[in-house]
Length: 172
Image (cartoon, rainbow, N blue to C red):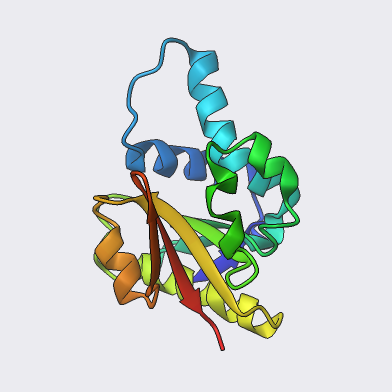
């Protein structure tokens, strides 16, 4: 089942699950302090939780446990404050008109390769299409393991700039 953050009965538990899945999924595992760890988490999730909670989707298993999440923004160009938070956010700003929405998705280990991430991405894409958006995108590493996943999910417009790869999915 897929549910938006505002629809969940226990927001704090949902955000705790998001944080757990985030740190299980990120390549960075060590931090100099608890404050540095918290700042890293806020960099990649804070804006979405605070400013776009309706575009924060959770995947739940049959028992209601959170097994994945998607954070999204439907107006990348309009979210100018994200350029001050997320490193290299503006690197692909010239692509925002064709692919205005962006997303981040993570799935709990043990539930990967079961279609959970794809369902989250497709649900967000449906929302974006219903809002009349022409496309959505994400940025990942050129050699990241997730590139093949996103290509299978329809992200076929690719541009590489340095070690980063922009992947866009047309919605029309």
